[in-house]
Structures are given as structure tokens and as C-alpha cells.
Image 1 (cartoon, rainbow, N blue to C red):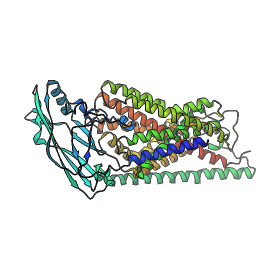
Image 2: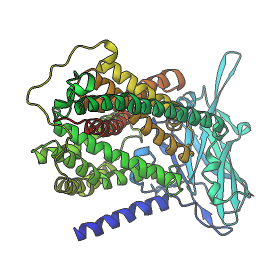
Image 3: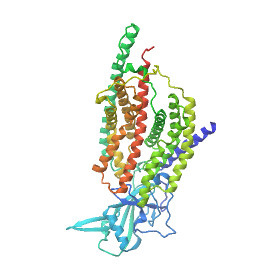
Image 4: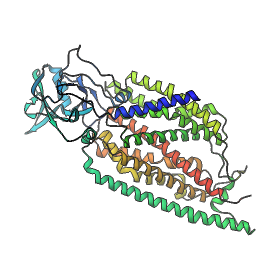
Length: 585
């Protein structure tokens, strides 16, 4: 165990190093130092996941001895980034009036590729000192019904620097140098570029902020926070009324009748004292869901805190996915401990099966969905397909870090946990559950239980979708962390309230229902994803549809498991509390 503690310290230091490396604010340069510009991908502007290698189009390509593909991290590979060296030659604080990049002879095949790219509004991505640069391949102009296709042949780079650091960079395409390429079988084109370097008062800390064009919508964020806080206060107040007035009133009246020796007829949730702690079916699966939910909750907390305090910069290429995978692997011990610990409370005996469930319940479905999407992306020769090397690295991380930690966590959870101590005894005979009106049935509870938490976060969900699929850069991680806390509170409150209503209807099957009620918010996220795809975005094409909905499916499963665990734990604490106050022989 001492050696294991040393290993955990090393792994934790690795996470911090990842965050600190991702937080690097660019390199330091001296005047005249070379600053490499890497080309990345091209693809339709409306389809963020449909990306191809930059040199799949007939641009200026370095000679084979100079063309080098930059080794990508796991996060870069997942994002579909493929960095290559280029012919652009930039030096720190050294402006360029105009410089020829190369001269290309386009044949019919090259022109057809460019025409297709321009019609689909292809844009390219480059990286300059860790800063993304974007621009369009060409433009479409219509004149008297005549569609004309132009390719941009001159790029102008604007760089801002402060002392020895690069602060900001962007690209503008010179429309006056655009060359028409339609209705031609061959063409000779000369590509060129220029650059301008300007000093700025912004510091390296402002690099990420200068890339966020939608910060002007900040007032909408504050309205979202006010709406969410109001909802939390409303739900918390309602829950307080339920517990402090209705439940306490029932408890006091029931206790007084027992003390006075009166034979008062039991009703409502008090009738269930002999069945409320009857263990549910599939207790191993429920325990594994709780363990994985605790693991995902840990991952969210760590990533949001690291982002909010500035130790992790999700804008940095590949940093969010890389950190997420490592933190997920390190948090596997939480999944094993919680799953095995709760399984012991439910008097489970098949420990090996429970630990295997905890280790695979999230990883296997995600792997299957991702692999299916990657096979389709590979057929289209898209860079969004995960390289085999990156897939092997992820598998090795899960095998040599995630799986052992799940096992060790399961052993520790089994040894440290004790059987569930219930305040009332469970009868052998199962109580019959009466019929109830539709508004007290499980389906109605699921719909209501998912709607209120989603209403607290839907504006933030919109911004996240805009970031993922709308070419925006998100940077309000402090607000996102606050909204995440609000989401957990609302989920816990509404699940406890609906559990009370269920018990009042003399239905003791609250175990799985409370979990599904808490997780049903994911169904609203799924519904919103359909709305966003159809009504908000301009995404199209089979590849983009597959990549979009595979990501949505994984995200919804993530929220279902995590919020389901939150709802269940809150309901368990509530049930233990109210039945612990009853005086029953």
C-alpha cells in the first residue's frame, strides 16, 4: 500500500503537469527568432467534424525532406488535428511586405478539388505559437445568375506581441488577389503572403481571452445564472416545506400516537417501513452505476476546477481531451471503491462481476460508439478518425492505470464498507403496491425530474453546443462551474421531492426510480441536440451526422450515469433520515 501511495502521488503530479503545460502562455522569442507555422486541417465550415489533412488540397507543399508531421498528443488525435510543417517563413518582430510561397500548376483534377472545396465553403486551420488561425480557401460570387469561383492566393498575417511573447495572431485573405478557377482545365497560380507585427499592451494572460468573440453576450450569461439561482431557491424552499412541515408533522403525529398508546391507523409513507429498505433487483448493476457516477462526478469537478483557476486551458490544442482521459483513468479507483462498498451494503456476493461492471460500464459503450464512428470517418479519409496509435495509447492507459485502480478501489471499498444499517426491519412478505393516477407514475416522475434541472442549464448547454459545433471559443469556466453546482443541487432536490411523493403513494420501489429520475435530464439534452442540429446549425452530410450524434450519445450517457448517481444518493439519505425518526418496534 505504501508503494501504491507513491504511484498515486506520481500520477497526481502528472495531472498537474498536464494542466501546467496546457496553461503555457506561448514561448519567449528574441527579435529575428524563427516562429514556425504549422498547417492543420481543411473542411466545410458548416461541418466541424468533417476535417481532412491540409495537403489533401493542392496547396504549396514542402519538399519531402522538409515535410514533417508533428507528433500529436492523444487529445489532438481525438480532435482530428494533424499538424504538418509548411513553407511559411516567419521570424519574430520581422514584418514581411510580400513574399512568394510557391507557384503551382493546376490540372483538371486539382481544379475540381478546389471547386468542390470552395462550393462547400472549406476553411483551413493553422497553428502559430499555440494560437489557432483560420481562413477560407476561396469565395463564391454571383453576378447576373453567373456563379463564379475564386481561390485566395495571398494571405496577410497580423501578429501582436508584448516584449518577447506573441499575444495574438489572425489571418486576412486579400480578395484583390483572388484568382477565378471555374471553367478552366489548367491554371498556373502563384501563392504569396505578407505579415505585420505590432506591439500591444495585452499580456500573455490575455491570449485565450482575445480568441473569444462572443464575450459580448456576457449579459445573457448573467440572466442564465439569475434564472438558475432563482430555480434553486424555489426548489430548495419547496423541499424545505415538504420536509419541515409535511414530513415532520407526520412524524410528530405518529410518535405522539405511539406514546399515548393510541392505535392510530398508518397511512402514506409510514406504511412502507417494512418494505422501503427491501433491496432492489440487479443490485450489482445499480452499485456499478453509482461507482461510475461518482467517478464521472470526480472527473467533472477536477477538470472544471483546474479550468476555473487557470491551471488547465481547454483552448490549448488537445489539452482538454488529454487531461480528461488521464483524470478519468486516475478516478477509476473512486468507481471501484464506491461500487464495491455499496454492493457490500446490499449484501452482494459476486465481487468479481461487480468490479468488472464498474470498470467497463462506461468505457465499453463509449469505445463501441467511438469505434463505429471512426470506421465511417476512416472510410471518408477524414482526420476525425482516431489513429490506431492513439487508440492503442488510450487502451494502455485504461489497462495499466484505470483497470488496476478500479481493482484496488474495489478491494478497499469492500474491506472498509459495512452492511447497510437500516432504521427499520424489512418484512418477509412483500407489500402489494396500489394503483395510482398517471401523475404519480414513473413516466411522469421521469419527465418532471429531468425538465427542472435542464431548465436550469439550457442556456449554458446552448453555449457549449456553439463552442463544439459553431466555431466559438468558450472561456467562462468559473460560470460553468457555478452552473454545474446548481445542476447538482436542482437534481438532488427534485429527486428527493419525487421520491417522497412516490413513498406517499405507498410504492416502495424507489431505488431504481430515483436513479432514473436524476438521470433523465440527459433525455432533454438529447432532445435539444436534435433541435440544435435541425434548427440552429447548418450541419449536413452522413459523416457529420454520425460524428455529431455519436458525441451526443456519449455525452447523454455521461450525464445519465452521473446525475442518476446524484439523485439516488440524495434520495437514500432522505429515506434513511425520515424512517430513522420513526419509533417502530
